Figure 1 (cartoon, one colour):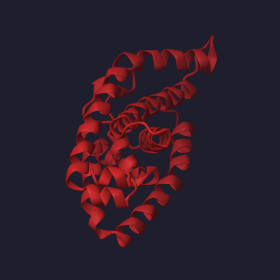
Figure 2 (cartoon, one colour; figure 1 turned 90 degrees about the vertical axis):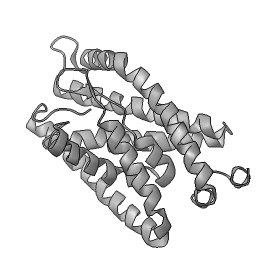
Figure 3 (cartoon, one colour; figure 1 turned 45 degrees about the vertical axis):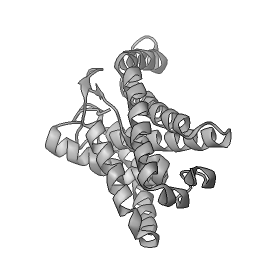
Amino acid sequence: MHIMEGFLPVKHAIGWSVASAPVVAYGLYSINKKIKENPEQRMLLGVAAAFTFVLSALKMPSVTGSCSHPTGTGLGAVLFGPSAMAPIGAVVLLFQALLLAHGGLTTLGANTFSMAIVGPFAAAAIFRLARTVRLPFGVAVFLAASLGDLLTYVTTSCQLALAFPDPVGGFAASFAKFAGVFAVTQIPLAISEGFLTVIVMNALVRFNREELNSMNVVTGQEAQA
């Protein structure tokens, strides 16, 4: 993530695009439905999209054919649910491929699957679980953003290992190599993203408390705090 242009075999590139397409399509439906029902949420949706674009544009070299960077998708997943982040992430990745030479068009499906599907779904699930066990709001947001980021890179490691299995150890050995190299840069990036997402979310709660309560992001008691 971002896996660079032309790096994946053709069958893998097509396969990940086919896997991502229905989730992106459903995400568009989900966004349109939310905005029609609550037009005032457009501003928050724009904040989530901008946050994803800016953070995921901050890259550093990592595994050959890829790079490490924050993803920024945890914020939107917590606010709007994971499906909404699929089309947002896909559009962000498309613009980055065209304007910043991050990723590529042939690898857009694979990058969308890892950053815009697995990451947000993981982040949303972790946030809901953390809230279910009554962890503080800030802790829940931190865990969602940081672990969603890390699971994005676990997925990318799987994608690369499937495409380039180790001649001796196969998929498992290749996955260990890719994941091990990613971990050097991605673990501190994920922790940093978690803290930054908490800061941004706290600011949103401060100025949009009632709206976030209506979206079930904060509880009624927190909305009155």
